[in-house]
Amino acid sequence: MSAKGIIVAVCGEKGGIAKTTTATTIAYDLARKGQRVLCIDMDPQGAMSSIMGAAEDDAGILDVLAGENAAADLIQSFDYGNGSIGILGANAALSQAEAACDMRPTILAEAIEPVLKDYDLVVIDTSPQPKTKAIVAALTAADHVVLPVLAEPKPTESLAKMAAVVERVKGAEALARTHVVITRHQPFVNVYREMATAIETFCEAKGIGLLGTVRNSCSVVESQALRIPLSDHKRLSLAACEYREVADKLAGEVL
Image (cartoon, rainbow, N blue to C red; front, side, top):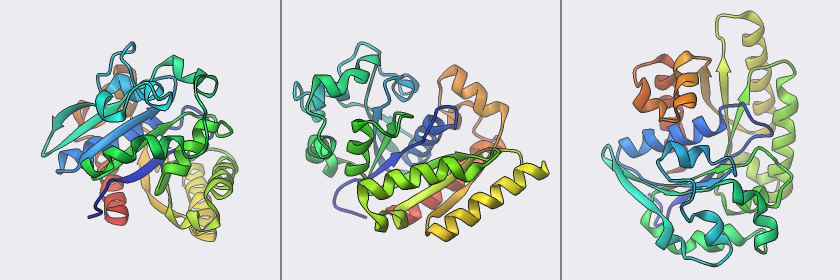
Protein backbone atom coordinates (compact mmCIF):
# COMPACT_ATOMS: atom_id res chain seq x y z
CA MET A 1 0.00 0.00 0.00
CA SER A 2 1.33 3.44 -0.93
CA ALA A 3 2.04 5.96 1.84
CA LYS A 4 -0.30 8.36 0.06
CA GLY A 5 -3.38 7.93 -2.07
CA ILE A 6 -3.02 6.66 -5.62
CA ILE A 7 -4.79 9.05 -8.00
CA VAL A 8 -6.96 7.66 -10.81
CA ALA A 9 -8.52 9.98 -13.40
CA VAL A 10 -11.58 8.62 -15.20
CA CYS A 11 -11.78 10.30 -18.61
CA GLY A 12 -13.79 10.16 -21.80
CA GLU A 13 -14.02 11.99 -25.09
CA LYS A 14 -17.80 12.47 -24.85
CA GLY A 15 -20.79 12.01 -22.59
CA GLY A 16 -23.00 8.94 -22.43
CA ILE A 17 -20.19 6.43 -22.01
CA ALA A 18 -20.90 5.63 -18.34
CA LYS A 19 -17.88 7.66 -17.22
CA THR A 20 -19.43 8.89 -13.97
CA THR A 21 -21.05 5.51 -13.34
CA THR A 22 -17.64 3.89 -13.73
CA ALA A 23 -15.93 6.40 -11.43
CA THR A 24 -18.53 6.26 -8.67
CA THR A 25 -19.03 2.50 -8.80
CA ILE A 26 -15.29 1.87 -8.50
CA ALA A 27 -15.19 4.25 -5.53
CA TYR A 28 -18.12 2.65 -3.73
CA ASP A 29 -17.02 -0.92 -4.44
CA LEU A 30 -13.51 -0.33 -3.08
CA ALA A 31 -14.74 1.65 -0.07
CA ARG A 32 -17.07 -1.22 0.77
CA LYS A 33 -13.97 -3.45 0.97
CA GLY A 34 -12.18 -1.16 3.39
CA GLN A 35 -10.42 1.44 1.26
CA ARG A 36 -10.38 5.14 2.13
CA VAL A 37 -11.50 6.78 -1.11
CA LEU A 38 -11.53 10.45 -2.02
CA CYS A 39 -13.71 11.40 -4.99
CA ILE A 40 -13.09 14.65 -6.86
CA ASP A 41 -15.75 15.89 -9.24
CA MET A 42 -14.11 17.83 -12.08
CA ASP A 43 -17.21 17.68 -14.29
CA PRO A 44 -19.39 20.85 -14.21
CA GLN A 45 -22.48 18.65 -14.61
CA GLY A 46 -21.88 17.55 -11.02
CA ALA A 47 -23.32 14.05 -11.42
CA MET A 48 -20.75 12.45 -9.12
CA SER A 49 -21.45 15.13 -6.50
CA SER A 50 -25.19 14.50 -6.72
CA ILE A 51 -24.80 10.74 -6.39
CA MET A 52 -22.65 11.22 -3.29
CA GLY A 53 -24.99 13.70 -1.64
CA ALA A 54 -23.08 16.95 -2.10
CA ALA A 55 -25.47 19.88 -2.48
CA GLU A 56 -25.16 21.96 -5.64
CA ASP A 57 -24.49 25.17 -3.70
CA ASP A 58 -21.83 23.63 -1.45
CA ALA A 59 -18.29 24.96 -1.75
CA GLY A 60 -16.16 22.43 -3.59
CA ILE A 61 -13.29 21.82 -5.94
CA LEU A 62 -13.57 25.21 -7.70
CA ASP A 63 -13.07 27.00 -4.37
CA VAL A 64 -9.99 24.86 -3.75
CA LEU A 65 -8.53 25.53 -7.20
CA ALA A 66 -9.18 29.25 -6.82
CA GLY A 67 -7.26 29.24 -3.54
CA GLU A 68 -10.25 30.29 -1.46
CA ASN A 69 -10.27 27.16 0.70
CA ALA A 70 -8.00 24.24 1.50
CA ALA A 71 -9.13 20.85 0.23
CA ALA A 72 -9.19 19.44 3.76
CA ASP A 73 -11.75 22.05 4.82
CA LEU A 74 -14.27 21.21 2.08
CA ILE A 75 -14.14 17.42 1.80
CA GLN A 76 -17.47 15.90 2.86
CA SER A 77 -16.89 12.44 4.29
CA PHE A 78 -19.01 9.44 5.27
CA ASP A 79 -18.42 5.83 6.24
CA TYR A 80 -19.30 3.23 3.66
CA GLY A 81 -19.02 -0.52 4.12
CA ASN A 82 -15.70 -1.24 5.80
CA GLY A 83 -14.13 1.96 4.47
CA SER A 84 -14.98 5.57 3.83
CA ILE A 85 -15.65 8.06 1.04
CA GLY A 86 -14.84 11.74 0.82
CA ILE A 87 -16.22 14.01 -1.89
CA LEU A 88 -14.95 17.32 -3.24
CA GLY A 89 -17.99 18.38 -5.22
CA ALA A 90 -18.62 20.43 -8.33
CA ASN A 91 -21.40 22.41 -9.95
CA ALA A 92 -22.00 24.37 -13.12
CA ALA A 93 -19.70 27.19 -11.93
CA LEU A 94 -16.78 24.83 -12.52
CA SER A 95 -17.20 25.47 -16.25
CA GLN A 96 -15.77 28.93 -15.54
CA ALA A 97 -12.72 27.52 -13.76
CA GLU A 98 -10.30 28.60 -16.44
CA ALA A 99 -11.43 32.19 -15.96
CA ALA A 100 -11.73 31.99 -12.17
CA CYS A 101 -8.24 30.71 -11.48
CA ASP A 102 -4.85 30.06 -13.01
CA MET A 103 -5.60 26.62 -14.49
CA ARG A 104 -1.98 25.58 -14.82
CA PRO A 105 -1.27 21.85 -15.36
CA THR A 106 -0.13 21.26 -11.76
CA ILE A 107 -2.93 23.15 -10.01
CA LEU A 108 -4.98 20.11 -8.99
CA ALA A 109 -1.96 18.06 -7.93
CA GLU A 110 -0.75 20.90 -5.72
CA ALA A 111 -4.21 21.51 -4.24
CA ILE A 112 -4.80 17.94 -3.10
CA GLU A 113 -1.25 16.99 -2.11
CA PRO A 114 -1.83 17.82 1.59
CA VAL A 115 -4.74 15.35 1.92
CA LEU A 116 -3.32 12.40 -0.03
CA LYS A 117 -1.89 10.85 3.13
CA ASP A 118 -5.45 10.41 4.43
CA TYR A 119 -6.62 8.23 1.53
CA ASP A 120 -5.75 4.98 -0.21
CA LEU A 121 -7.33 5.96 -3.51
CA VAL A 122 -8.39 9.20 -5.19
CA VAL A 123 -10.90 8.98 -8.05
CA ILE A 124 -11.31 12.02 -10.33
CA ASP A 125 -14.39 12.24 -12.53
CA THR A 126 -13.51 14.54 -15.42
CA SER A 127 -15.45 16.59 -17.92
CA PRO A 128 -16.18 14.94 -21.31
CA GLN A 129 -14.20 17.69 -23.03
CA PRO A 130 -10.67 16.38 -23.53
CA LYS A 131 -9.16 19.63 -24.82
CA THR A 132 -9.78 21.70 -21.68
CA LYS A 133 -7.13 22.79 -19.22
CA ALA A 134 -9.12 21.03 -16.48
CA ILE A 135 -8.52 17.68 -18.19
CA VAL A 136 -4.82 18.48 -18.44
CA ALA A 137 -4.77 19.27 -14.71
CA ALA A 138 -6.56 16.01 -13.86
CA LEU A 139 -4.23 13.95 -16.03
CA THR A 140 -1.18 15.71 -14.65
CA ALA A 141 -2.26 14.82 -11.13
CA ALA A 142 -3.14 11.22 -11.96
CA ASP A 143 -0.97 8.17 -11.38
CA HIS A 144 -3.33 6.05 -13.50
CA VAL A 145 -6.03 6.75 -16.08
CA VAL A 146 -9.26 4.81 -16.66
CA LEU A 147 -10.98 5.19 -20.05
CA PRO A 148 -14.57 3.91 -20.32
CA VAL A 149 -15.28 3.07 -23.95
CA LEU A 150 -18.53 2.12 -25.65
CA ALA A 151 -18.67 -0.95 -27.84
CA GLU A 152 -20.03 1.04 -30.77
CA PRO A 153 -19.33 1.43 -34.51
CA LYS A 154 -15.70 2.43 -35.07
CA PRO A 155 -15.01 1.95 -31.36
CA THR A 156 -11.28 2.57 -31.54
CA GLU A 157 -11.61 6.12 -32.92
CA SER A 158 -12.74 7.59 -29.61
CA LEU A 159 -10.26 5.45 -27.70
CA ALA A 160 -7.40 6.52 -29.97
CA LYS A 161 -8.25 10.20 -29.38
CA MET A 162 -8.20 9.80 -25.60
CA ALA A 163 -5.02 7.71 -25.71
CA ALA A 164 -3.42 10.52 -27.71
CA VAL A 165 -4.48 13.06 -25.06
CA VAL A 166 -2.98 10.90 -22.30
CA GLU A 167 0.23 10.49 -24.29
CA ARG A 168 0.46 14.22 -25.02
CA VAL A 169 0.00 15.23 -21.38
CA LYS A 170 1.89 12.45 -19.62
CA GLY A 171 4.16 10.89 -22.24
CA ALA A 172 4.04 7.56 -24.06
CA GLU A 173 5.08 5.65 -20.93
CA ALA A 174 1.76 6.64 -19.30
CA LEU A 175 -0.13 4.28 -21.62
CA ALA A 176 1.18 1.43 -19.49
CA ARG A 177 -0.75 2.99 -16.58
CA THR A 178 -3.89 3.49 -18.65
CA HIS A 179 -6.81 1.08 -18.29
CA VAL A 180 -9.92 0.58 -20.44
CA VAL A 181 -13.40 -0.47 -19.38
CA ILE A 182 -15.79 -1.50 -22.17
CA THR A 183 -19.21 -0.20 -21.16
CA ARG A 184 -22.82 -0.74 -22.27
CA HIS A 185 -21.80 -3.98 -23.95
CA GLN A 186 -24.31 -6.42 -25.45
CA PRO A 187 -22.46 -9.73 -25.25
CA PHE A 188 -25.05 -11.76 -27.17
CA VAL A 189 -25.01 -9.54 -30.25
CA ASN A 190 -22.40 -10.47 -32.81
CA VAL A 191 -21.57 -6.93 -33.89
CA TYR A 192 -20.97 -5.87 -30.29
CA ARG A 193 -18.65 -8.80 -29.74
CA GLU A 194 -16.73 -7.78 -32.86
CA MET A 195 -16.43 -4.20 -31.62
CA ALA A 196 -15.24 -5.40 -28.23
CA THR A 197 -12.61 -7.51 -29.95
CA ALA A 198 -11.46 -4.46 -31.92
CA ILE A 199 -11.04 -2.54 -28.66
CA GLU A 200 -9.08 -5.40 -27.11
CA THR A 201 -6.79 -5.56 -30.16
CA PHE A 202 -6.18 -1.80 -30.00
CA CYS A 203 -5.35 -1.98 -26.28
CA GLU A 204 -2.93 -4.84 -26.79
CA ALA A 205 -1.14 -2.96 -29.59
CA LYS A 206 -0.83 0.19 -27.47
CA GLY A 207 0.12 -1.55 -24.24
CA ILE A 208 -3.07 -0.37 -22.55
CA GLY A 209 -4.63 -2.62 -19.92
CA LEU A 210 -8.20 -3.90 -20.18
CA LEU A 211 -10.01 -3.95 -16.84
CA GLY A 212 -13.10 -5.70 -18.12
CA THR A 213 -16.44 -5.42 -19.85
CA VAL A 214 -19.74 -4.20 -18.35
CA ARG A 215 -22.97 -5.06 -20.10
CA ASN A 216 -25.76 -2.69 -21.05
CA SER A 217 -28.27 -3.07 -18.25
CA CYS A 218 -31.50 -1.54 -16.99
CA SER A 219 -29.92 -1.43 -13.54
CA VAL A 220 -27.22 0.93 -14.82
CA VAL A 221 -29.76 3.18 -16.55
CA GLU A 222 -31.94 3.25 -13.44
CA SER A 223 -29.06 4.10 -11.12
CA GLN A 224 -28.00 6.91 -13.47
CA ALA A 225 -31.54 8.33 -13.58
CA LEU A 226 -31.99 8.05 -9.82
CA ARG A 227 -28.45 9.30 -9.17
CA ILE A 228 -27.68 6.60 -6.64
CA PRO A 229 -24.75 4.17 -6.66
CA LEU A 230 -25.24 1.06 -8.77
CA SER A 231 -23.79 -0.99 -5.91
CA ASP A 232 -26.64 0.24 -3.67
CA HIS A 233 -29.40 0.21 -6.28
CA LYS A 234 -29.04 -3.36 -7.56
CA ARG A 235 -25.94 -4.87 -6.07
CA LEU A 236 -26.65 -8.37 -7.41
CA SER A 237 -27.30 -7.32 -11.01
CA LEU A 238 -24.92 -8.70 -13.62
CA ALA A 239 -23.64 -5.19 -14.41
CA ALA A 240 -22.94 -4.51 -10.73
CA CYS A 241 -21.06 -7.81 -10.46
CA GLU A 242 -19.02 -6.95 -13.56
CA TYR A 243 -18.18 -3.53 -12.11
CA ARG A 244 -16.97 -5.21 -8.91
CA GLU A 245 -14.64 -7.33 -11.02
CA VAL A 246 -13.40 -4.15 -12.72
CA ALA A 247 -12.83 -2.44 -9.35
CA ASP A 248 -11.02 -5.47 -7.95
CA LYS A 249 -8.75 -5.70 -10.97
CA LEU A 250 -7.97 -1.99 -10.81
CA ALA A 251 -7.17 -2.26 -7.09
CA GLY A 252 -4.89 -5.20 -7.78
CA GLU A 253 -2.95 -3.17 -10.34
CA VAL A 254 -2.72 0.22 -8.64
CA LEU A 255 -2.92 -0.29 -4.85
